[in-house]
Length: 350
Image (cartoon, rainbow, N blue to C red; front, side, top):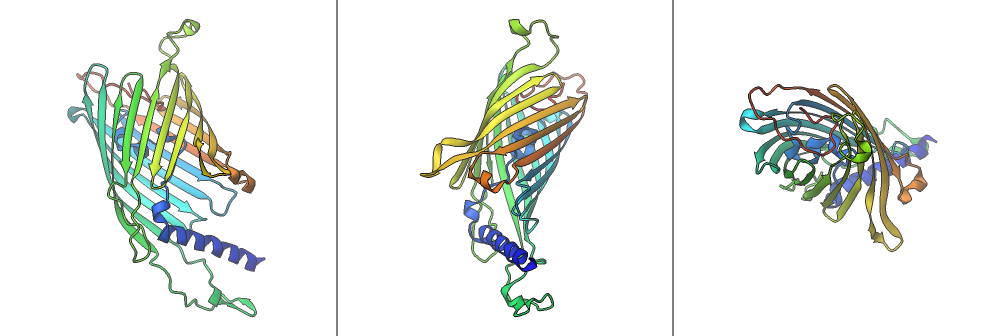
């Protein structure tokens, strides 16, 4: 039993090493289903977009029933300086794959500038620069030269020549968002410097990731059917989409958010149904459902990914995400109120 488990772990680890060292050009970034709940990760132009002090904790647990599960933890802080119309932010992310065999840690600093183009049009431009490190853990791995006729011998050191277990890199990203009181469109480019993430002496640049986001908020409070409700309540539906492309991979998330005052629900589809990886392999990934609630300055959101690809046969148990957003309000005395983004945040600011 132990021998079988060791062999299985080694196969998994070798696969991770191969992908991390030699196939970096085909890798994809971390993805969050609640993408608007992790705004600094989505686009650096979102830094300071709440116009208050904002603290965010965002966690994702993907495929918990598989050994190759992915666990991602992100924390961020951002604020807005009204006198210079600028947003500042800092974000830390840790991602673990294969029960921690491969881990990635990044710390990013972000800056944005807000420009009012017209009474209805506002543009935000942003940039980020960060430091990242990838680490391969060999400590609990066994190799073929540690097995004898009697089985595995933990006291026998391996003569395998191992890779450099750590790779450091610089990472740069840019982005912009154009929005009106009801609609928005944004584009971002991450890894524009194409950092080398190879653990070997070869060069394997990480491809630039381009992401396009957009949506339109439809208020319902003014419709005849909803006219009896209190006018100060935020009651709306918001169709949204995000399209990402990186290297040879691309992905589309499209769905709908509904908000009733303090409560938010959302559902969307991830995949590109018109595209096939192979003749018998459709580009379908998951259906995502989200619920959210905010009370005063605290917002809580939970989402679950229902896997609809052929991976369902392995029973991976989808993916869970939990978001906590806390706002400390800033009072901007003697200044004109700032225009808020219409996209579905837990807290938009006053």
